[in-house]
Structures are given as structure tokens and as C-alpha cells.
Image (cartoon, rainbow, N blue to C red):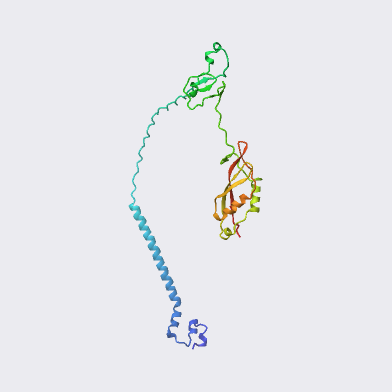
Length: 276
């Protein structure tokens, strides 16, 4: 037991271990803790210092080695002689413009019934054989034969007529026209009709099938629809697209050269599922 008078000056460790077995080891470990901690920190600092010094020395040696290995050579600049430009000859002048060859032309004047002695030589009409490969004009002109010329036709009445142009068959079904057939009222009316009439097939909805069906049909001169068939698009949607076209009534007929004609029409119909 510590004397009461020594308690104030005694170490805290001695007070804790007063009356206990100090030989056990715990007392000695706690008493030397500060000393061991100081030694450990000092040792760690020494190791770090050695590592730093070694790193610095190694870099210095490596740098010196590189300097010794480098050999500086004098660089000599050689004068580069530029090649003298050769005087190139000027480009040749463009070839003279060649005028197209003159086409042989025979003067033709309306025939008149006069006496033979009153007919001048230059006013005599050309012979029919010469007109087959000769261009008809207002003057006589020598030149090359004009191949592919359609000669005037003599109808036997003393009057020469130009060949008649083949007339258009206005009753045929046109595939290309100047103005295509259209739904009456334009795009806005067509969309309103689809919104009111189109029914999305339930099987297609259940299988989430959507897409665009192109329907081909014929619109005649009066706007009647016929020969309706789906030519592309999902098979599950084609029947409904055909039904809508057949039920659409009369259309505005196509126009060709100012005339209403019978023509083919291709109309796309789009089926789209709305996100729930």
C-alpha cells in the first residue's frame, strides 16, 4: 500500500497497480508504452527518409547517365537549289466552231393552175422522189440529206398535207396523268372519312400489328371506284383497307390534257396503335 503522503506525488500507473502483481507483465507494458511508441515513430521516419534519399539518388544517377549517352551532332544546312521553272508553251487555241451542215431543202409553193409557158423554172414544184429525203422550206438550198424526214402527203386533190399525228386513246386506263384522282374535299376530308369509317381489326390489335397498307384501284371518268386490291402491307390489315376504299363513294377523276380520264390510283392507309 502506498503511503498517504506519497499519493499526490505518485505516478497514476503506480496508483492503479497498487497492491497488484506488477510482475505479471501488464504493468511493465503500460509503463514502457510511451517509449515504445516514440521508438516506432522514429524508426518509421528513418525508413521513409532512406526511401526518399534512395529515390533521389537513383533519379540523379539516371539523369547523368542519359546526359552522357546523348551525343550532340552538328547539323549542317545544305542549300537546296530550286528548280528553274521551264517556260511552258501556251495552250493551243480552241478549235474553230464548226457550223452544222446545211440540210438540203426544197422550196415548196402552193400549186396554181396556169399555162405551161407562164411557169418559171424556180417556181416549179419539186419531184415527189426528191421529197422523200429532202426538207421542205421556203427556199431552195443545197446540203446533206435529212434522214428520217416525213415527206408531205399528196391526197390526190393537188393539196399537200402534213402527216397526221396519231390521236390519243382517251378510253384507256392511264397509269400516269398530269393531275391524279383525289378524294373529294382533299386531304382534310379524307382524314375525317378514315376517322369515321376505319375499324382496327381486333386480331391485329391483340397481336400489336400495325403499319401502312397500299391499296390500288381504278377511278373512271365519272369518279367511280373499281378493281380495288391491296398490293402491300400487313396481311391482317389488308381486308379492312380494301373495305374502306370500296365504301368511299365517288372520287374526283384524273385529268390529262384538260380531259377527265380513267386512271389507276394508289392510296396508302396507315394503321397505328396508340400507347396505353
